[in-house]
Each structure stands twice: as C-alpha cells, then as structure tokens.
Length: 129
Image (cartoon, rainbow, N blue to C red):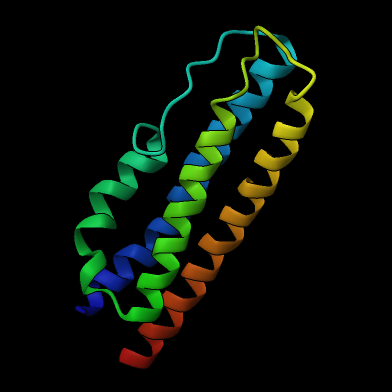
C-alpha cells in the first residue's frame, strides 16, 4: 500500500466525521421541530459519497487490519442509516425514542471506529517512514 494512500485516508477521517455529524444534527433538528427530513441511504449521504469515492476503490489494497476496520465502519454506517430511515420527524411514533437511542448508539460507535481508523493509519504511517 503506497504511503500516500494511507496518508490521504488518515487526512479524510475528519471529513467523514464532519459529514456524519452534520447529517445527525440536521436529523435531530428536524425531529425536534417536526419538520420534513429527506433521509438518505448510506451511499447517498455526503459521508457515503465521499467514502465510496475514496475508500472503496482502494479497500482491497489496504493492510488486513485496516481493511477489517473499514468493513466494520461500512457496516455500522449503513446500520445507522437503516435505523434513522425508520423515523419520520413529521409523524412521531411511540417507538421513535427507542430508535433514536439506537441511532445515537450507532452514531457514537461509528465515531469511535473512525477515530480508531485514524489512529491505526497514523501508526502505520509512522512505521512506514
């Protein structure tokens, strides 16, 4: 794996976190205000579009340890969207609180895994210098 690819991925982690945080904030605001929200799949949101264009093309070339974490992140991200799509901010349901809690758990897990990816990539970069 070329040094530059690992470095580029490490630098993108902050962008992925920012994209995810923005999506969550917009959804939570829509829920709070009872406003329309356009849900997106894990491949349609800004995180997913960026991920699919930068990480997916090089995934098979990544070191196994990094690839395993990338696979986990993808799974968690798509699960987050699956849960969030079940919530209609304009039509609150009694089950929404449970879904919101699960969504927040998945969001926190996603952020922890992204930070773990950044640490792992940084470690690999130091080893390759």
